[in-house]
Length: 405
Image 1 (spheres, rainbow, N blue to C red):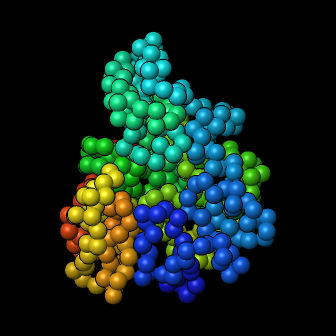
Image 2: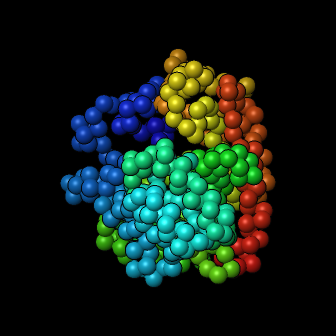
Image 3: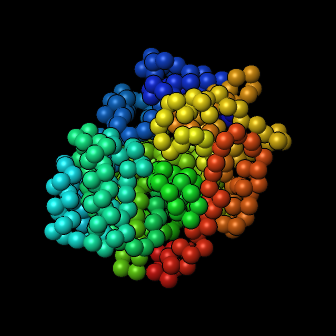
């Protein structure tokens, strides 16, 4: 947006991430002092819905959440109740406040389950555990391990019945009154290693496409249009689902930008982002101008990702330089970096260096475009997945046969 000629000020609340963006744009230490200066205010995270509502009531143009959409994401039980209320079927899930209670439940009702932390703990994506044992014995072992390592600090969590199928996300922008087309269909790659091995990271990369017509959208997000309008929500919302031949089963909401989803969406949006966000926040109805075909993106990360370990980060990654073999930064999105004397240095505390995107008329074209760009980057000790987009080959066949594309 800054490159398009707009003035921009950036505020980061998270203490360990204060340096991010330094040298790229103007940083401020108190965002509230600059609300009168801004034509547009963007909140890129959940939990600020009440503040967003107050600012909108003052006549400010705001992209961000609402109290209602914060609850959809942060309170899994509330989200499930709302899905049922909007006549969308959900997988059986059960809320627990302690581990022993959950273990006794599995012993009485043996099945394959998924452990899903609620509230603040759900930010630790590696704690999400997808069981594979039909008796739930693997889930019991993990619950016992969590009890030893976390004790009472874990908070509430859900056990959700596991179902096999294709994991897919349906995302769209909302202008306060209605959804803006086209909608975005997304395939996330959450495990650390290729072929879905290793711990859950939250995200290692994503493939996607835009479409005006989607049976998946009509069966899920579209049903929330009136409720989102009532909440005066303006922003981006995503619903993650498992789909199979028996139907569509929503898992959870993300009522904010997704990461790296928003950066990869940007690779597919052909109109200026400043204009796009301004129109959205003004409540205008318009079609988003997007590329045909597919967009794909991969995170380049450094130690200790996906874990938090300050000593390891300081030793291996802090202030490491991002080097480009050729001076071409197309498709390169700086993540947790600062810019010192035109050198990109890694900062923050999580070890996400870059998001690299690619586009193409076919998924193979988009992958080739992205990985060619990855080859232009050198980051010491970095790692990334080499199979982002491969899921599409099999998943698309299944989705076609189920009538969902």
